[in-house]
Image 1 (tube, rainbow, N blue to C red):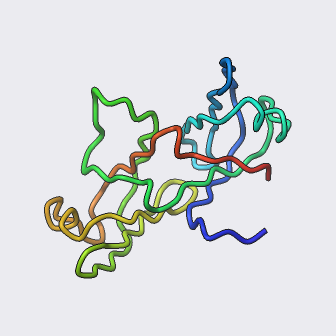
Image 2: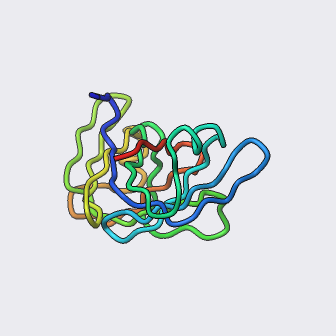
Length: 139
């Protein structure tokens, strides 16, 4: 299946915490980072997820925020460190390529943010992703 979602990170389910309707699914990415996805219980069942299941974590570029250092006191579960490898800016928006352990991410942010954060290739960043913005597919 071809997808327009550029950010597809392989990993393995390490834990599932079910709730009434939703579940949190912990994934260890191949680069060693831990990622949390919040998905429906129905999706957990449909995908047959259990600890040890190989998955791909999918995140749209528009759902990634960037920080120049780890952030404390924040409800966002996923903070993935990396280094900017490419930056394409337009009048309103920018596409930022980030090398992370085991893969790469693309973030779509405002051009103003790239200026405010002084982003350029080689600059270390932290990609921030809410757990509700992570989709899972079985590998």
